[in-house]
Length: 269
Figure 1 (cartoon, rainbow, N blue to C red):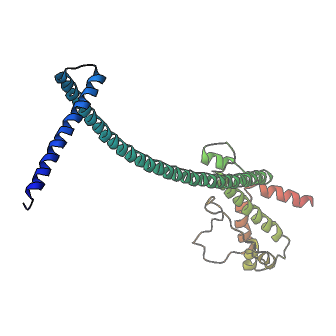
Figure 2: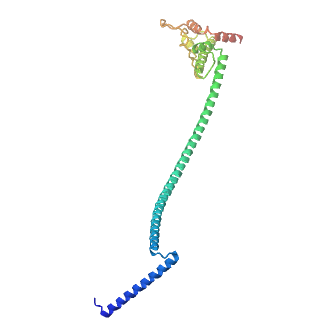
């Protein structure tokens, strides 16, 4: 706005000069392009240039798309790697839990095996004890000449002494022992004085002498198994005489073979 006419004239000259230089530069570039391309047709060169630019732009867009896709793939790969790391960590944790569980199961197995071994040892010990008991009971039955047919008839079997029926045979031994003790007491009473009172004689026959009481021996006849033995009637309220008491005891013992054997042994002595 404040420029002088001289300045305006100078600016016009500069513009003309730059236009001339630009035109000259373009012509020079065009000549170089024609030389390189080997073609003097300017329109054809321009079309080729436009096509090349279009191809370059398409390639640029393709490269950008590939870069974007590559970036997306890199992100996916990174995410997959993180997931793989997480899965590996979880797998390691599961393996550790599995190993811990296996260790616990193995310890339980060893403990169960130890308990089973202890129980087997106990069972073997109990079995040996039962075998010894059965042998002892069988020996007692043989030595005491017990009638096993009573037990065999009750059990319905003659298989011998087993873990299931040993108590029945022990009961038979107990019964036989009571009979033998009663017989022994009766035979011993014959050596005592004949003038003792019926009450003292009854105590003696029942094994209640001072010597036997000191030894804690108690005669327990098995009245339930033989209800006909010692059949004392309630009608007789008077005390038994010595002879009546002796006959009552004899009624329970004369029927046994043990009495006859002991009597024979006593006679031999």
